[in-house]
Length: 182
Image (cartoon, rainbow, N blue to C red):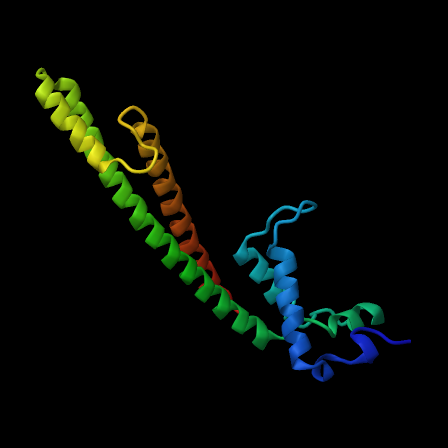
């Protein structure tokens, strides 16, 4: 009867490439959101992979369970995965920070439009109202109008706050991952 990896191979005999694929596949299977399971966070997924890289502590395990343990994750591969995940998170932070800067610029632009709108509404003379209206039109983009820019302004502010929270969560993930021991 053959147990474990195909052809009865044990941990040291399993090709290194296959060990890498096993860790990558397990990582993807755990971290991916699927319709039949809920999402598991990156740091929790890595904790599972680390746990699966440790040898079993129980000597009273049955033969079947012992043989199943022979295919556990290679700790060296899991260590490299941690580094890759951290680099990936750092890249995601970089891209998100770029987007946050774009949002800040749009918020600043629409804040200026809002100031013109307030000044226009307060203006008594038609000449002054037209001056502020023209200033607004110069700053407005795409489908924005003096009547609807406020909606875009609120959406940009909401997107900005959401992305800032995402960046903070990503930094927290990195802190957790860096504390993990294999």
